[in-house]
Amino acid sequence: MARATDSAYATLRQMILRGEAVAGSRLGEADLADTLGLSRTPVREALQRLEADGLVELLPHRGARVARWTPVDLAEIFELRGRLEPYGAARAARRGVPGAVLDELARLCEEMERAASDREHQAIAELNAAFHEEILRASGNSRLPAMVKTVVHVPIVIGTFRRYDTGALARSMGHHRELVAALRAGDPDWAEAVMTSHIRAAAGFLMEESR
Image 1 (cartoon, rainbow, N blue to C red):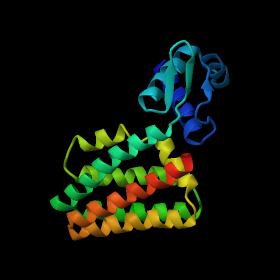
Image 2: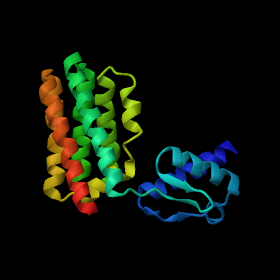
Image 3: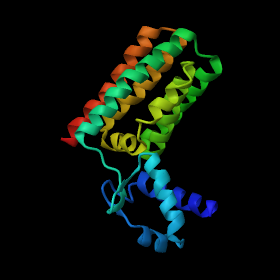
Image 4: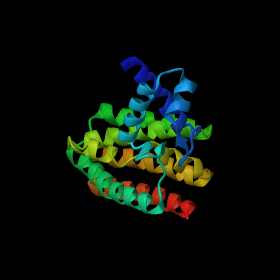
């Protein structure tokens, strides 16, 4: 049963992240079980896991649907990110980031830039998540990565990159490079300022598009 649940979870998660199951669309247990060739129990358990990930909403007496976010939801998410991530970047710079971590951040920048040139939005989002997680771990605050993860929803990040035009995408990539430079310099004020600008730019673009 655990393997069937894992399979259902992985398949449904990819459907959501790729946009095959759009925000607000219904996820019927019976239909999904038929599509996946599974019983309803592993599908139900997979949906519960996806709810914990913030990708699915389970509605009383109405079943499941792909999570969707209102402008209020987006404002709350980015407000929290705008407070937590700049703090994490400043703390990492203040503590000093090991050379191996800086090299990994630089590598992730290169990978993101390659993905951006091909408009591979899911790849950009996954690399972006890894980049931000590296900085949060480097902050030395063991609770911070988990706190941020609860408010950062991958579909929102993918949706942000999909909406970016060439200029906005280049600006985002430039922020990443500047963050690495600030961390390498050990300058907490610089790192905090760049991360703040980075989060605000994403928030402003997505909020404008959601209106």
